[in-house]
Image (cartoon, rainbow, N blue to C red; front, side, top):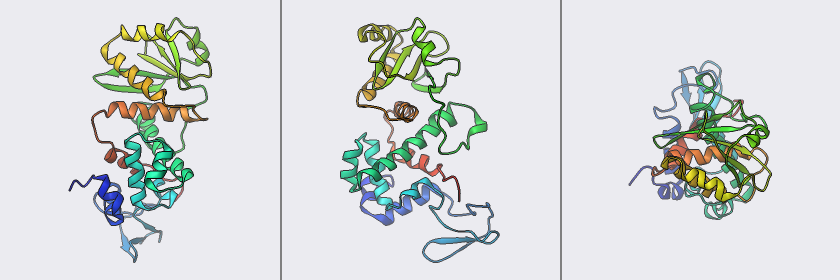
Length: 272
């Protein structure tokens, strides 16, 4: 059976534990989480102690995945539902979790995607690869999107701000609390939060993108389809929502379960 089969992981806690441990520690638990010392001792109940600093931990210590204190098979169920783009309500029913816990799990997943897509891979450079889990964009940030060979690359467009963007000669339209603005200069698209009902008629904006490259048209349709599913965006949801859409676009046709698990493996709590 496929080791990435979510159904098996959802049904078997031991299989889920083994799967996630292999994701987080592909070579086994080899060093202390706190000081990095290589000499560690195995204790009972799958715990370890560092010889140098005496820190005791287990295979999931310090990970955001461990912060919810739910069984790993439940995490497998949440990842599977998130991959299928289920709502939080449906995911709570499928995973048999309470709704607030499901929302927290979704937030952890989306923050992991945000760090990976916006800040680590395509954002502010290699010097910020270890950026804190809670990192966010400044209020009113504009995101610039460029498309190349089926990959959307996104970064903070620091030379733009929403008020300025609305005055430029661009075609733009509001979807789900986010404005999509076409640009012919540095970026293929500019995205930013807005509470306006519209900026230009929808058919005008759509015709501009339809006359652009096929790649741009496909991306805009992909973006619009997912934004229209959002009834509203809460405070701070803008970069998380856009990052998730970019992540899904860049992985069209690819099973996301393993990718999502690997992103969770990179997210650690602030203090051990």
